[in-house]
Structures are given as structure tokens and as C-alpha cells.
Length: 320
Ligand code: NDP
Image (cartoon, rainbow, N blue to C red; front, side, top):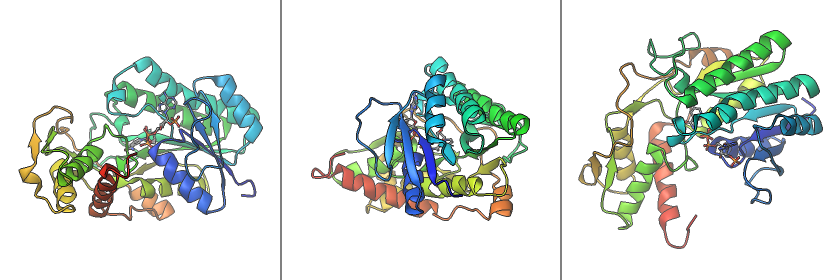
């Protein structure tokens, strides 16, 4: 590709950070969009930040027409734990309808642009089979999952009907020190660090036996890039293919700061959903076969990295 401009939506998010870091290191001119107020601090690795209301079709069209980027990574979303159910109208607009604005903008003003859409394993909802692959039926159980499924479907329709290079990655959970604070991985790692530093006594969690397919965000973002560099647009399930429990996460986090989690963690606060009747876990064989992608950063290394980052954050001289 001679055009080396990449547009990444939701510049302040976790995946946007890793995308900008990897793309800029490979010589890309990375432009971010942000729904926050203009004048916000420019996140690292972005050349510029464009204020953008993704729900405003005219704004999206004007930006795509002006930049004509080689690729767009749509990783903006209302995606916190609470955002699964709160304000379903806003979730529908941002997580669902905004993608149609991007696709329309590509069709009208920049038809050679390639689009990556961040779909979600939440689209499987009450899954009918395990593990989940690209052919597993969808059955979302939240406005978040339903909006993601609408976006996912529209990406396929624009690919088939208008011949656009548009594809979706069905992403399973992925974490890093940049993960949002409402997610259980951040709570576990932050809890271990705070207790290590004597700033908290114990950590209250929900269902310790809940299992998830957790990967590192840096690995997931590598898959997004590989999808846009492939010979053609195709949707893929992206995950590690292995589940770990919240208790296992506690074990790694607390032992990486020299503590025994059993002495500090209580299961009670209902902040984590009960175990799924059918396990949500990725079958990433198609992306492995087609693009040679597989997760490289292990669960233990990821949880240790997150816990040590929390330790640094919690030290009084490093407030963030
Ligand atoms: P984050 O929540 O870290 O980042 C999402 C970003 O979207 C925010 O930082 C914000 O950036 C932007 N955003 C938030 N609310 C709005 C809004 N109302 N209107 C417009 N933009 C908004 O998400 P991740 O990086 O973890 O995830 C990236 C994508 O992958 C998301 O689409 C998510 O749904 C999807 N996904 C993530 C999974 C995970 O485990 N992390 C699993 C499955 C799917 P800014 O303030 O700069 O606008």
C-alpha cells in the first residue's frame, strides 16, 4: 500500500493504543478520532486526533472524504461492563449505526479504503455450541451484543453488495494495563497491588469460578492488522482458544506480588456474571490456517504485567 494513513476510532481506548503503537512503528501515519472535547491530550503514537461524533453521519463522511485513509480500524464503542445494558439507545447508535456511517462514507468517498470492525463474542450470547467459530449461530443477550451484531451484519452486506473491503474480527476478551477499570481483570490486578502496598485489606469479587477466554490486547490488535493486510476481506473469530477462571487470575496476580490470594479475596459482591451454561471460548483455527495468527502472550505473563503496572500506578509518586 502506498497510502500509509490509518484512521483509528476511539483513540483513548485500550486497543486504539496498541494499534497506534504497532502501526506507527511500521511507518504508518496514524490519525485517531475521539468523541471527547476538542483540545484533549493527544494519546501517544497518534500523529493527530480528530474530534468526531461517530453518530453524526455528515461528520463521518466529511472526515473520510478529507483523509481518504488506506484503512480504518473501528474500535470505538460503548463497552464498559455497565454499558452492556445502560442507555441502549446510545449503544445502538455508537456500536451499531456508526458503522453504517463509516461504510457509507467509504462507498461514497473512499471506496478503496479497508475497514476492520471490532465485533464481539457477546454476539454469541447464549451460545449453542462450544467452542465458537465463524459458523456458530449468534444469539446476543444484551443491547451491546445486539448492536454489535447489527454492525457485523452490515459489514458483511456492504462487502457482498458493494464490494467494499470490510471485515469483522469476532473478538473474545482481551486485557492489558490499559483495560477499562470496570473489568474484572483490572479489579483483580489493582486489588493485588493495593493490598501489597497496604492501601487495601481485601478484594471482594463475584463468581470466582467464572471462566473466560482471555488474551493480551497486543496480540488481538496484531490479528486486526493481519486481517487488513490479507489477500481479501474475511471475518474471523479471534481469541486464545483456552479459558481460565477468575480464581486462576487471582492466583497469578497475587503471587506476582508475593501474596496468597486465598487470604485476601472474598467471593460475594455480584459484580461478575455467573458461569455461562455453555462455555464462551474461541475456536481460532480459521485465522490460524489462513493468516498464521495465534496468541503469543500467555495468560500468566499478561496478568503479571497488569499487576506490576498497577503497583507502579498505585505508588504515590506515579498517580495516573
Ligand atoms: P475501550 O473501552 O478501551 O475503548 C473504546 C473507546 O471508544 C473509548 O476509549 C472511547 O474513546 C470510545 N468511546 C467510548 N464511548 C463512546 C461513545 N459514546 N461514542 C463514541 N466513542 C466512544 O475498548 P477496547 O479497546 O477494550 O475495545 C476495542 C473494541 O473491541 C470495542 O469496539 C469493543 O467493543 C470491542 N471488543 C473488546 C473486547 C475486549 O475484551 N476488550 C472484547 C470484544 C470486543 P475516545 O474517548 O477517544 O472517543
